[in-house]
Length: 387
Length: 184
Image 1 (cartoon, rainbow over the protein chains, first blue to last red):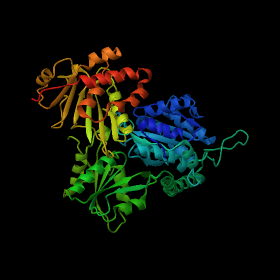
Image 2: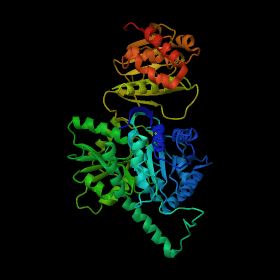
Image 3: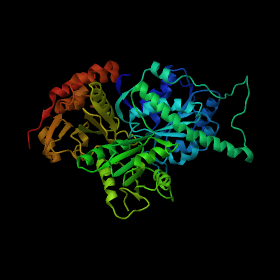
């Protein structure tokens, strides 16, 4: 097992990728991802790994360059945030349709406007339907582990899809905390070189990402959809192999003190830790509360969520984004949808909180649990927002 | 768990202070966090940075609003920003100032535990610059006992290379020259 070190999480994310034998990185800097971009550039410039760093002029170019590199057979990496991710939007579904296993870190940050550089999940939500595998991390260690695992998941012959690892901006990226790294040799054993299914090469010309007429487009979409849904099996398998090799266990849906809870809260990302501390405090006071933490956002782990919330009376779904003009937060909308057909389902409260870096303390999570005592349910409500 | 809030001005290295404390604590086998007040960096403006140190894993991702310890790197911030805000009863206030502890107590109308040290003078004499972030580490170690002086050696060497020993000297002097104010 690797040595325990103190390190900033953004630097650690770049160091983790440096263990993954990547061929190409194209990273355009943006707050709060900048330290990943700078450190990745340093690692490659210093010759610590044998890879190309492409200094692109925008995020649109970064993801486009990586589509080309990945099609040529390279293991390709980028990192971005907020407006950068929004600028990539056009290319994201093309990368997944071409079945290119590009991996990306997203330092979650609010989307403009108004301009705001702080943390929430409004940047990743508009990318929800882009066909990327979408993972969330709760702390720095998970940022390291999932960054390494993302390549193995994405490149699996049953998957061949891009993967984005969400690392909450500032809350995680700018935090110095204790971390453990696997050794280069251990990662090399876990993650062998990529074996592309198809590859652009001048000696053997092929076409990729072609034009599709109405008689083939739908089939392509369906094939991608089936691959994305099927990737959950591979995610679970890779998590199991990681646990065996490195001792840290991951599940697509995590639960915390949920077994006998009558009220559960569902979170994604770094807020899960603060919420866990709130649950500990409330348990001490005799309240039957627990947590469900969504690690895999896409593909949506339907069966695992159903199993995790079965038996609870009230489910509070916390969203750090809103589907503007829609039925509520994107997470709650999906959760409600999959439970609609269930005979026994919990009452669901949707809380929109922590937008644009609005801080949430342990006390705030206790307050959110108290919302379950309310008699009248709204479709969703904003927490801690002034009228 | 002990929570520390650092007040400085952008460019004075408050973030380096929290980094040094966090790295030293982690190297000593503890759990720790070091982080800036999230947002854009502004040279010269009043800024804050934070530490959490614990013997158990830390599962809190929010800011620090009720610190156990407040450290002020820049004397000009006293009376300018509310440095005692949220300081826990029984908490510790540590200020870089050439003034007497009693003068500071009066100026802040603060009755709790108070320590002062003339870190700017020490930094000028030991480092040749009035940058007090590493000097004030010594004051924090002495006032809180959270870590030993030697625990900072490796993080300082890693960060400052050949000038690490000067920073160590400045830190040790602040450790030795820290004054405690008479109880109010």
